[in-house]
Length: 376
Image (cartoon, rainbow, N blue to C red):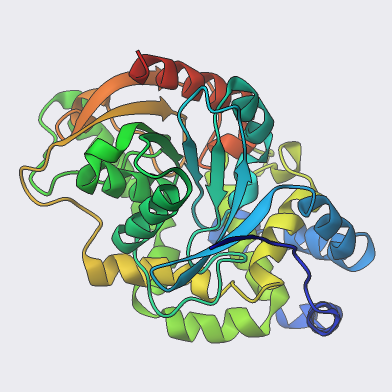
């Protein structure tokens, strides 16, 4: 059963969040050096001051409830999703976000794609936002089954297109690997799952591999923590809205395609507003999904779903929007082609990890071009 859904966070929950924010003791937080060792404290203070003085969740809630929100249960898991209907002349499109983003990353794509004729489905991943509670840890491979189950419930055996970044990309890759006949194709702005025996061979591939590993060595401490100790981390995240905001704000500052200030720190306000960032943060904090949203990392570890078996060749057509993500460097096309059937590739001039949020027009144009390619 698919049911309309209205967002309505309890007054008591909002009051508890406000109390925690107001009571945060900044004197206990010395600054180790701006953004060089984590989130920039001055930028976090700016965000929290806005949270205390100007942010109104009820106003945000009213705006979010204007979107076509629904819930359903797939294999025992509650899934929240947006479903913007087109006229049925084009294939359905499934848009998948990652961590620490939300379904709102794709908000600017809803009207254009539905106007093209597509039904557009944008779920909250299991454990994120209003796709809660979940029955236990769910990794990307299991999430792929749930997302395919959602599309089957909505559209029967009709073939569809998937677009994803971050975990959405991982999930799209697993759908493409295990359900290739369900897809017309899939589009990704983060190609990071490969066959276990894929190895760099050319000078370009080896250079990318070395640069990528050097960056990830500095930038993936969060990943190891969420993979191996999500329970302990969850104790802190559940208790501190400011702590959760810092944990999430750091990723927007480090992963987005942002200009640098003279001291080398990211100019986060050149791309994002306080209202925009707090809306995404509150989609983790307000429904108490900030803990379970991290479980997908643990699920990946348990599933061993960070790579495909040796010799895997994903035959569903792949389109790549290679945005210049400053942390998760896009691979050379030649390396991606060792695992995937690439039919479309665009090297983007700008835009980072949150591509659909940062550069919706570029994402929309590239997705349209890919869909035209696989629909011929």
